[in-house]
Amino acid sequence: MSTLIDGKALAAKLRGELKEKVAEFKRTKGEIGLAVVLVGEDPASQVYVRNKIKACEEVGIRSYSYHLPAETSQSDVEALIDELVVSEKIDGILVQLPLPKHLDERKILRRIPHTKDVDGFCAENVGNLAMNRETIVACTPFGVMKMLEAYGIDPKGKSAVVLGRSNIVGKPMAMLLVNADATVTVCHSKTQNLKEVCAAADILVVAIGKAKFVTADMVKEGAVVIDVGMDRDENGKLCGDVDFENVKDKASYITPVPGGVGPMTITMLLYNTYIAASRR
Ligand code: GUN
Image (cartoon, rainbow, N blue to C red; front, top):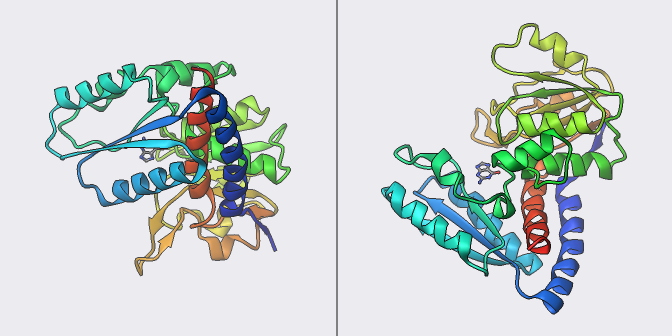
């Protein structure tokens, strides 16, 4: 039987600690502000943004919400970002992705300076991460590292496999694990012998967005399994990229969905906003 990595409980603990730090910051240096920009009506994005704003309130960070219509022009989105960049009230700028198709995401994100890039997406922050220097780290992989740390799982010398190579999760996750002295393999849709590669992992991080993709035969006995997925099963029920019911008895540690990585992602966004304010 495996140990459940309780992301919800860990997130609550970290948010409690952060709330005290934010209160102390406010006493001496003033408010901390996060701007959240949502363009369009994507239902999942609306839920994520709502949760982010609620979490800000919980720890005492002031949120500034900008919900723009789906047909907003490139220049109007850029003009808003430019305003937020110079605003002294704003420590962090988050543009919820994906953006509507007619918008040039890269051009928009490039207007956010690395000091306010609380998502850790920009080239400067990613470059610093690659060089193992102080930086702002993308929230989801950062949250995964915090989970490993909280449960006393040291990646040093371990074989870690990351399933997925996105800029938001897979790539920064791999860099964090390398920086923590793991031996890292990154798998993706073109990987050969995927099952064997996964089954050799001491730590398996799964972020491919396919419901219950990782089955028990892909997991080594005693492996640590981290599920970044947020999918729906055949009955429309929320589930992860890992076939939890069948994998849980094989793993030594496993994250559930929901209640695993999800709450940690938002917590690290709050943490990154606090850090950005501290470096003002
Ligand atoms: N869309 C899905 N995940 C994320 C994230 O971590 N940050 C932003 N800005 N958009 C997302």
